[in-house]
Image (tube, rainbow, N blue to C red):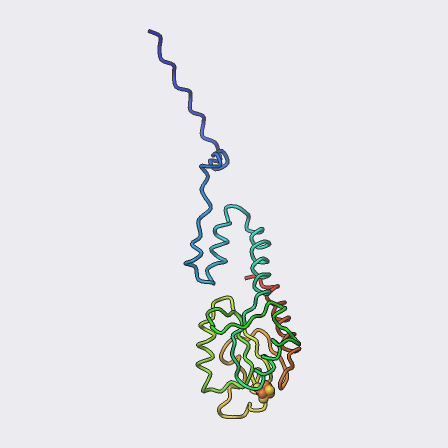
Length: 202
Ligand code: SF4
């Protein structure tokens, strides 16, 4: 009987295993359970998932600008009003100024909002409600102090009952001067906020 053919020699292990593996054997990009992520966890999870596909520098040049672009063109302010400045806030969404053309759409639940426009006199009595609403908004979120009252207490700044500026309660990104500021001023504040979001790095 003839001798059985000898098994072919096993090729030497490559120096870089991943480089020699066929595509099907490479580690898969981690699956993201998007439904289970909180808003603040989404960008870190997306970065981790893409880290195998693109380099660190490319992530900064691709992911952050895309999220900034989406965020600044779809701002959802909370639909609430505190005092006379709220009338100007409402007018800005009417047919004449049409704030929605900038993608700014008021929502009635803080859980679907990323922008808090404080448009009136903040009293100490309402302060804890304002903080609760702010904390119910998902990250990333921004605050605009609209008018002199929200900025620094306005004509009531010496009153015992008035908060001398909403930045004593929550962090403010943009201040709008005026008593009241006109709808154009509110739109200008929103455009300033869009500039801040465009330049956001983390
Ligand atoms: S800044 Fe003037 S217009 Fe605005 S809420 Fe205060 S008093 Fe009213």
